[in-house]
Image (cartoon, helix red, strand yellow):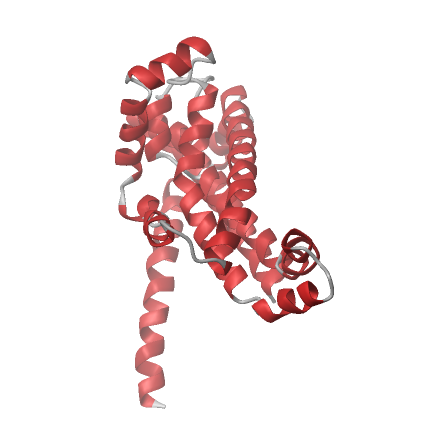
Length: 253
Protein backbone atom coordinates (compact mmCIF):
# COMPACT_ATOMS: atom_id res chain seq x y z
CA UNK A 1 0.00 0.00 0.00
CA UNK A 2 2.85 2.37 0.84
CA UNK A 3 4.49 1.76 -2.54
CA UNK A 4 1.13 2.40 -4.25
CA UNK A 5 0.91 5.79 -2.53
CA UNK A 6 4.48 6.67 -3.56
CA UNK A 7 4.06 5.88 -7.26
CA UNK A 8 0.57 7.43 -7.34
CA UNK A 9 2.03 10.67 -6.01
CA UNK A 10 4.17 10.94 -9.14
CA UNK A 11 1.05 10.55 -11.28
CA UNK A 12 -0.70 13.27 -9.28
CA UNK A 13 2.36 15.49 -9.71
CA UNK A 14 1.85 15.35 -13.48
CA UNK A 15 -1.81 16.29 -13.04
CA UNK A 16 -0.88 19.12 -10.67
CA UNK A 17 1.74 20.48 -13.07
CA UNK A 18 -0.55 20.73 -16.08
CA UNK A 19 -3.56 21.90 -14.09
CA UNK A 20 -1.42 24.65 -12.54
CA UNK A 21 -0.46 25.89 -15.99
CA UNK A 22 -4.07 25.98 -17.16
CA UNK A 23 -5.42 27.54 -13.96
CA UNK A 24 -2.72 30.23 -14.02
CA UNK A 25 -4.22 31.50 -17.28
CA UNK A 26 -7.42 32.34 -15.42
CA UNK A 27 -5.52 34.87 -13.29
CA UNK A 28 -5.65 37.17 -16.34
CA UNK A 29 -9.16 36.14 -17.34
CA UNK A 30 -11.59 38.98 -17.93
CA UNK A 31 -15.04 38.08 -19.22
CA UNK A 32 -15.59 41.36 -21.11
CA UNK A 33 -12.23 41.21 -22.92
CA UNK A 34 -12.66 37.49 -23.48
CA UNK A 35 -16.03 37.98 -25.18
CA UNK A 36 -14.79 40.77 -27.44
CA UNK A 37 -11.69 38.79 -28.40
CA UNK A 38 -13.53 35.53 -29.07
CA UNK A 39 -16.20 37.10 -31.27
CA UNK A 40 -13.84 39.26 -33.31
CA UNK A 41 -13.48 38.73 -37.05
CA UNK A 42 -9.79 37.94 -36.65
CA UNK A 43 -10.48 35.19 -34.11
CA UNK A 44 -13.14 33.65 -36.33
CA UNK A 45 -10.63 33.62 -39.19
CA UNK A 46 -7.97 31.91 -37.05
CA UNK A 47 -10.40 29.25 -35.87
CA UNK A 48 -11.72 28.64 -39.39
CA UNK A 49 -8.21 28.42 -40.85
CA UNK A 50 -7.05 26.04 -38.13
CA UNK A 51 -10.08 23.77 -38.55
CA UNK A 52 -9.83 23.65 -42.36
CA UNK A 53 -6.08 23.11 -42.55
CA UNK A 54 -6.04 20.55 -39.71
CA UNK A 55 -8.85 18.61 -41.39
CA UNK A 56 -7.14 18.56 -44.80
CA UNK A 57 -3.69 17.68 -43.44
CA UNK A 58 -5.09 14.96 -41.17
CA UNK A 59 -7.15 13.42 -43.96
CA UNK A 60 -4.09 13.34 -46.23
CA UNK A 61 -1.94 11.81 -43.50
CA UNK A 62 -4.50 9.10 -42.74
CA UNK A 63 -4.86 8.22 -46.43
CA UNK A 64 -1.10 7.63 -46.60
CA UNK A 65 -0.69 6.21 -43.10
CA UNK A 66 -3.15 3.33 -43.42
CA UNK A 67 -1.53 1.48 -46.38
CA UNK A 68 1.99 2.42 -45.21
CA UNK A 69 1.34 1.19 -41.67
CA UNK A 70 -0.26 -2.00 -42.99
CA UNK A 71 2.81 -2.71 -45.12
CA UNK A 72 5.13 -2.10 -42.14
CA UNK A 73 2.98 -4.30 -39.91
CA UNK A 74 2.46 -7.25 -42.24
CA UNK A 75 5.38 -7.49 -44.67
CA UNK A 76 9.15 -7.60 -44.70
CA UNK A 77 10.77 -5.64 -47.51
CA UNK A 78 13.95 -3.76 -48.32
CA UNK A 79 14.16 -0.45 -46.46
CA UNK A 80 11.50 -1.34 -43.87
CA UNK A 81 13.75 -0.66 -40.88
CA UNK A 82 14.87 2.66 -42.34
CA UNK A 83 11.27 3.74 -42.92
CA UNK A 84 10.35 2.65 -39.40
CA UNK A 85 13.25 4.73 -38.08
CA UNK A 86 12.21 7.87 -39.94
CA UNK A 87 8.68 7.70 -38.52
CA UNK A 88 10.20 9.10 -35.33
CA UNK A 89 11.66 12.15 -37.11
CA UNK A 90 8.79 14.53 -36.17
CA UNK A 91 9.33 13.52 -32.52
CA UNK A 92 13.09 14.02 -32.35
CA UNK A 93 13.31 17.03 -34.68
CA UNK A 94 11.96 20.27 -33.25
CA UNK A 95 8.95 21.76 -35.10
CA UNK A 96 10.98 24.88 -35.93
CA UNK A 97 13.76 22.73 -37.42
CA UNK A 98 11.19 20.74 -39.38
CA UNK A 99 9.73 23.98 -40.72
CA UNK A 100 13.22 25.21 -41.59
CA UNK A 101 13.90 22.09 -43.66
CA UNK A 102 10.62 22.70 -45.52
CA UNK A 103 11.60 26.32 -46.12
CA UNK A 104 15.00 25.23 -47.45
CA UNK A 105 13.39 22.59 -49.67
CA UNK A 106 11.03 25.09 -51.29
CA UNK A 107 13.93 27.49 -51.78
CA UNK A 108 16.06 25.06 -53.81
CA UNK A 109 15.72 24.36 -57.53
CA UNK A 110 13.05 21.65 -57.14
CA UNK A 111 10.99 23.71 -54.71
CA UNK A 112 11.26 26.82 -56.86
CA UNK A 113 10.13 24.85 -59.92
CA UNK A 114 7.11 23.51 -57.99
CA UNK A 115 6.14 27.01 -56.92
CA UNK A 116 6.62 28.51 -60.36
CA UNK A 117 4.81 25.74 -62.27
CA UNK A 118 2.19 24.45 -59.82
CA UNK A 119 1.39 26.93 -57.05
CA UNK A 120 3.03 29.30 -54.61
CA UNK A 121 3.71 27.54 -51.31
CA UNK A 122 5.78 29.65 -48.92
CA UNK A 123 3.76 32.07 -46.75
CA UNK A 124 0.42 30.83 -48.10
CA UNK A 125 -2.53 28.66 -47.04
CA UNK A 126 -0.79 25.65 -48.60
CA UNK A 127 2.27 26.19 -46.43
CA UNK A 128 0.11 25.77 -43.33
CA UNK A 129 -1.26 22.45 -44.63
CA UNK A 130 2.19 21.16 -45.60
CA UNK A 131 3.66 22.14 -42.22
CA UNK A 132 0.88 20.33 -40.37
CA UNK A 133 1.01 17.33 -42.71
CA UNK A 134 4.75 16.81 -42.30
CA UNK A 135 4.44 17.23 -38.53
CA UNK A 136 1.79 14.53 -38.11
CA UNK A 137 2.47 12.00 -40.90
CA UNK A 138 5.11 10.00 -39.05
CA UNK A 139 3.12 10.07 -35.83
CA UNK A 140 -0.11 8.95 -37.47
CA UNK A 141 1.68 6.13 -39.31
CA UNK A 142 3.27 4.92 -36.07
CA UNK A 143 -0.12 4.96 -34.31
CA UNK A 144 -1.89 3.14 -37.15
CA UNK A 145 0.89 0.53 -37.25
CA UNK A 146 0.36 -0.14 -33.54
CA UNK A 147 -3.32 -0.76 -34.26
CA UNK A 148 -2.54 -3.10 -37.16
CA UNK A 149 -0.02 -5.02 -35.02
CA UNK A 150 -2.79 -5.85 -32.54
CA UNK A 151 -4.96 -7.52 -35.21
CA UNK A 152 -3.97 -11.22 -35.51
CA UNK A 153 -2.65 -11.98 -38.96
CA UNK A 154 -4.32 -15.41 -38.87
CA UNK A 155 -7.69 -13.73 -39.51
CA UNK A 156 -6.41 -12.61 -42.89
CA UNK A 157 -4.81 -16.01 -43.52
CA UNK A 158 -8.16 -17.70 -42.96
CA UNK A 159 -9.80 -15.28 -45.40
CA UNK A 160 -7.06 -16.07 -47.93
CA UNK A 161 -7.74 -19.83 -47.61
CA UNK A 162 -11.39 -19.08 -48.41
CA UNK A 163 -10.38 -17.42 -51.67
CA UNK A 164 -9.97 -13.77 -50.70
CA UNK A 165 -7.18 -11.77 -52.32
CA UNK A 166 -4.75 -9.80 -50.11
CA UNK A 167 -6.66 -6.61 -50.92
CA UNK A 168 -10.00 -8.20 -50.14
CA UNK A 169 -8.66 -9.53 -46.83
CA UNK A 170 -7.43 -6.05 -45.98
CA UNK A 171 -10.74 -4.31 -46.75
CA UNK A 172 -13.02 -6.99 -45.26
CA UNK A 173 -10.98 -8.06 -42.23
CA UNK A 174 -8.23 -5.69 -41.10
CA UNK A 175 -9.88 -2.37 -41.91
CA UNK A 176 -13.24 -3.10 -40.21
CA UNK A 177 -11.48 -4.48 -37.11
CA UNK A 178 -9.35 -1.36 -36.81
CA UNK A 179 -12.07 1.25 -37.42
CA UNK A 180 -12.38 2.37 -33.78
CA UNK A 181 -8.63 2.69 -33.47
CA UNK A 182 -8.39 4.58 -36.76
CA UNK A 183 -11.06 7.01 -35.61
CA UNK A 184 -9.03 7.63 -32.44
CA UNK A 185 -5.90 8.19 -34.53
CA UNK A 186 -7.75 10.66 -36.73
CA UNK A 187 -8.93 12.64 -33.71
CA UNK A 188 -5.52 12.63 -32.03
CA UNK A 189 -3.61 13.65 -35.15
CA UNK A 190 -6.23 16.30 -35.93
CA UNK A 191 -5.69 17.76 -32.47
CA UNK A 192 -1.92 17.67 -33.05
CA UNK A 193 -2.30 19.47 -36.40
CA UNK A 194 -4.76 21.95 -34.88
CA UNK A 195 -2.17 23.02 -32.30
CA UNK A 196 0.91 22.90 -34.55
CA UNK A 197 3.02 26.07 -34.38
CA UNK A 198 6.75 25.71 -34.97
CA UNK A 199 6.76 24.41 -38.54
CA UNK A 200 3.82 26.63 -39.49
CA UNK A 201 5.54 29.71 -38.09
CA UNK A 202 8.70 28.96 -40.09
CA UNK A 203 7.26 28.22 -43.53
CA UNK A 204 3.92 30.07 -43.46
CA UNK A 205 4.91 33.11 -41.42
CA UNK A 206 2.73 35.25 -39.18
CA UNK A 207 0.46 37.15 -41.54
CA UNK A 208 -2.77 38.32 -39.95
CA UNK A 209 -5.94 37.11 -41.71
CA UNK A 210 -3.85 34.99 -44.07
CA UNK A 211 -1.71 32.35 -42.30
CA UNK A 212 -2.85 33.14 -38.77
CA UNK A 213 -3.82 29.83 -37.19
CA UNK A 214 -4.76 29.76 -33.50
CA UNK A 215 -1.20 28.97 -32.27
CA UNK A 216 0.20 31.69 -34.53
CA UNK A 217 -2.45 34.08 -33.23
CA UNK A 218 -1.35 33.35 -29.65
CA UNK A 219 2.24 34.16 -30.57
CA UNK A 220 1.28 37.36 -32.39
CA UNK A 221 -0.90 38.58 -29.52
CA UNK A 222 1.82 37.89 -26.97
CA UNK A 223 4.34 39.71 -29.18
CA UNK A 224 2.06 42.75 -29.03
CA UNK A 225 1.61 42.39 -25.24
CA UNK A 226 -2.06 41.50 -25.74
CA UNK A 227 -2.24 39.09 -22.81
CA UNK A 228 -6.05 38.98 -22.67
CA UNK A 229 -6.26 38.20 -26.37
CA UNK A 230 -3.70 35.41 -26.09
CA UNK A 231 -5.52 33.95 -23.08
CA UNK A 232 -8.75 33.83 -25.11
CA UNK A 233 -7.01 31.90 -27.90
CA UNK A 234 -5.32 29.60 -25.39
CA UNK A 235 -8.75 28.81 -23.94
CA UNK A 236 -10.00 27.86 -27.40
CA UNK A 237 -6.99 25.62 -27.98
CA UNK A 238 -7.13 23.96 -24.55
CA UNK A 239 -10.89 23.41 -24.57
CA UNK A 240 -10.73 21.90 -28.06
CA UNK A 241 -7.84 19.63 -27.15
CA UNK A 242 -9.36 18.38 -23.90
CA UNK A 243 -12.73 17.78 -25.59
CA UNK A 244 -11.07 15.71 -28.32
CA UNK A 245 -9.06 13.73 -25.78
CA UNK A 246 -12.27 13.00 -23.88
CA UNK A 247 -13.95 11.80 -27.07
CA UNK A 248 -10.96 9.58 -27.81
CA UNK A 249 -11.18 8.01 -24.34
CA UNK A 250 -14.88 7.30 -24.92
CA UNK A 251 -14.14 5.63 -28.26
CA UNK A 252 -11.47 3.39 -26.73
CA UNK A 253 -13.61 2.39 -23.74
